[in-house]
Amino acid sequence: MTTEAVRPRAARAPRTAGRRRRYAPNDTTRPAVVSQVLLTLVLLLFLVPFAWMVATALKPAAEVFGEPRLVGSSLRFDNFTTAWSYVPFGRFMVNGIVVSVAGTLVTCVTSVLAAYAFARLEFRGREFFFLLYLVTLMVPQEVMVVPMFILMQEFGWTNTYQALVLPWAFSAFGTFLLRQFFRGIPRELEEAALVDGANRLRVLVQVVLPIARPAVAVLAVFTFINYWNSFLWPLIITNSQDMATVPLGLNLFLGQQGSQWHLLMAAATISVVPTVVVVLLLQRHLVRGIAMSGLGGR
Image 1: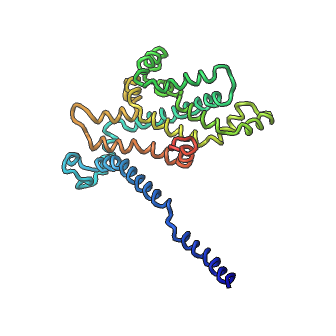
Image 2 (image 1 turned 60 degrees about the horizontal axis):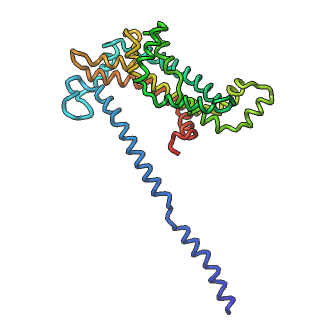
């Protein structure tokens, strides 16, 4: 009797434990919900200025500073065409695209070469020179514009594309970002290519760069946005509207004869389009690169 009494109890014990596990609360649900709510609030916080800019671009001029409402009495899509012809905005867009694309390409090439040298090549004083390279990150641009302007003037490059591109095409940030990424690539892949007879440049192009494509995409997006939004250096180095970029063109809507706020917002909305296109084109590599490079906060 003792054995038969014990067996049902032993058989019932797993069922009771199973019920407890089945109805146990999920501890990961609450943090996930909280994080989603916080991310949604941050997203809305960033979208509010953009929505206000687009709404102002579609308002009549008399209602920009009228009643505080998001949508005007009528949607004035002609504000965009007026803003385009109010100043030579098409020329500003072309200049901005040429400078930003050229600057991004040159910065990516120089950063890749410098980062690979600091990550893989063995030479005397490598760490010291890399530290000097990083020190330049602490020098603000405002300190460099005067000697840089004098140097460009000596070269005869004032009011030219090369003056807008080359002075800032050697990025310590890009070199640091790519160096950290290159150091995470297994050396065995490069050694196998070297054994097969490939030189260092071929190893970099055919072995390292395909793996580092996400990190290069992150650098390309950041560099393009920096060139596109640059205001101080183009203001100093250019002296004509033919070489002015988009930020300088937006400043022309604020004049002594009055500020055309509705046209300014329309032009600003147009100026956002190239950066949005670049981010969308590189979105897949951008997300992966931020996660793998450590810029995502991990």
